[in-house]
Length: 619
Image (spheres, rainbow, N blue to C red):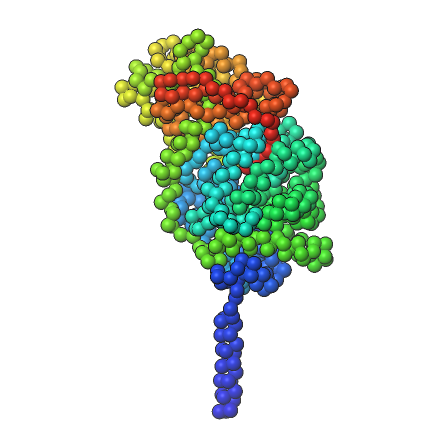
């Protein structure tokens, strides 16, 4: 019996020693002092095919859990538009949710952290109480090229001029940090924990589709694509952008999600992009018409083309991401997709994760929660609003300019569907994917901003759509009419008419017939307005300004001057479209670069010379 006990004890000792040896094994990939290439190589040699394909999979928050992360080795989770932990969720709720997913990822055999993605299009727009900045269409005034305003994503673009779009790639060091001197060329760079990985999208040419139809076909030769749609991607790569998202659209009939020559041949090999390429949500599904007609083929075509991470929603199609994992696994085992392609994808994904410092600091915390909707952020957004406004008219022929408005008057009128509506003011990609009208988040409406700006003795009367009897019965010093488009996103915003929402035109006609009026147009693009310009005393393009409506009042009342210039051509009629500066049929209502300027109580006209034609779309 003593001998048996001795053998058992010895066996336990050996087992303990073996276990201790395994636990004590030095893993280079966990050592931040090791060179990046060494860490990636060390980790990849330990990974199974299952673990590698898991890294290539991005799932929607709605289907994610710690158990799912662990079971499938998921590499990324995403919040699409409107995908939140709970209505009006706090910063703490967001943090707890993300950390729970991360715990699942870290509990896997190799403990590879996941990366969390979110559609933060103009601020952290999914998050209640976040500061919502002007959409890119407004920032482009301060500067994706949209060549046709009928496109429903035109407000996600900066301009019709690729040089303006290139200048706006300065957002990348804002998101990711400034690339250090002597940093390796074309390598992604993401700074300390206050920085995030950016995404240049949508590669490439989605703003040049026929008739401005979303996800449609961009017909243009190689030189046109290279010189018009591509330049900002070169700038983005130079500035260390971490990821590039592929467009739903096609180029000369070939789906971008299946375009090997552009994704692998040009982006990865010619431009030397070293970050990872991600599909748009359901992007590979749409390689076929109808979508998912042959899903296995779509997986093969997309991964072969060079897509490194595939974003699958799995909300509409149960377990869709599992189908992706299973199909890709089978394609690799059958040697249809070579292992070298899988390794390229995983190497790129891990490179970004290591550079971000996720292996050292995978969990998030509340240290920055107090910045959500902070006054500092709101003041910055308010400044952006001021600088994004374009003054298109100021005074009728021969009359004195109406702007800036006096702050002291007996009685003024505020009218229009967009005067007291945060949702309309923000547009799409705000709280919900397509946005919503109404009091959807914290902010300052135009009406509130006006009340904040005028003298307390000035009576401010709000009537959304006043009739003629009301207008005749009151003696208003002047009126501010805010009208425009209702919120939309992507395909739902495609329009062949580009009109403002009813009763916007009748509101303009009624009010401006009886009262001196300034019309503020809230829209994601130029809209049809020519027949009404003569009736209007002053006309302002305010685009989609976001939550900080006070920036509009700042300029209307002359605390600041108008400085914005049109970053896209304003058409007369939709029959002219597409029409961009340099076109032979160029006859705009307001040309590219146009904008009146004011200083407090002083006004002068300014017209910036038109630049050469361009077409890029980088969102």
